[in-house]
Every structure is written in C-alpha cells, then in structure tokens.
Amino acid sequence: MAGKPIVALDMPEEEEPLSDRQRKYLDICVEKLGFVPNVLKAYAWHSTKFDGFTNLYNDLMLGESGLSKLEREMIAVVVSSANHCYYCLTAHGAAVRQLSGDPKLGEQLAMNYRTAELEPRQRAMLDFAWALTKHPEEIDEPHREALRGAGWSDRDIWDIAAVASFFNMSNRMSAATDKQPNDEYHAMAR
Image (cartoon, rainbow, N blue to C red; front, side, top):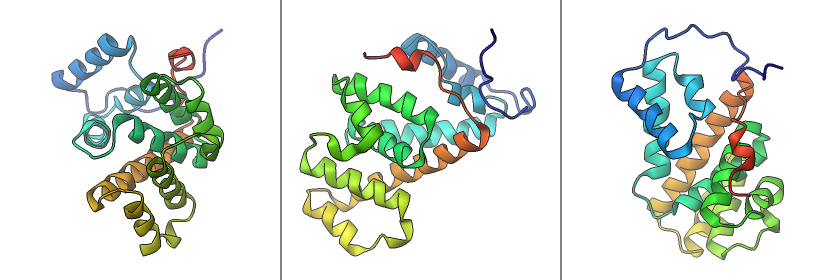
C-alpha cells in the first residue's frame, strides 16, 4: 500500500535545482536524523525557496538567542496546536520530547499547554505565542510587559515573536499543501 504523498500539490520536479551545498544540507539531515524531513523535501523543487525556508529556520531555531532550543520548540508546538497543524505538531512534538527528556511534555503542549508544569517565564512565553497566533490584533504593551515581568528581555520578546510568526507561516503552508510528517517522528523519544 503506497503512503500518502508528501504534499497534495503536483509541483514541478526541480524547477530550480538544488545546489551542491543544499544537497549537502540534506545529507547532513540523514546523518543526524536518519532521514530527510518532509518539510525539506517539500521545498526541494526550488533552490531559492529552499534557501529562504532553511535560512530563516536555522536563524530562528539554532541561532544566538536568550531562548533555549527547547523553548523555541515549545513555541513551535503551541503555535501548531492553536493552528491544528498535523505536520508541525508531529515533528516539533518529537523535538520537545527529545530535548526535554519528558515524553509527556510534547503531548501536553500539543493538547493544552496550560496543563504542563512550566516555569513562570515559559508560561508567559507560551501565553504570548498563543495570543499572537489566535488574536494578533489584540497584542499590545500589556502583553509585552507580561513577558518583561517574567524575566524576558526585549531582544527575547523579538525572538519569541519571530519564532511564533515563522510557525504560523509554516503551519499555513502545511495546511495549504496537506504536508505529511515523516513516519519516523511518531516513534521518536518515546
């Protein structure tokens, strides 16, 4: 039985082929993860779009920040929960399980982050990410003050907003294309 395609769109095969550097990036994924994430396969038809996605992802999720890698992944899961994004809930829920060492935390964040025992600053971070996702037009100074009161700097607030915004975009692309998560994510860190 053939599995569901990675995306529901019939995209041109390598309209703008990947460079050697980009192919090396995919090889590194196989070395580190044992597979190429379907999100990367979905962008691989166009090298400029692939670079746009991977450069921003790498900056936000791996770059210098006052947020830990786990905290950034937590934002990804909470935003994806608000948007009901199957791909990102699966992939980033696995990352939360792996980074936290807590197999329950990923599911709590996916179902209702308010059930998780979090540090007050993490709770404030996730409250902000949820509000920015569900009601962006309501974000105002009291929201930023709540983050500052929990110990986040203005630079950190920028990063929280940037990660939340990136995953809102990514969730919408996943929904629009019916992007499917790799099966490997379901068993990770369980």
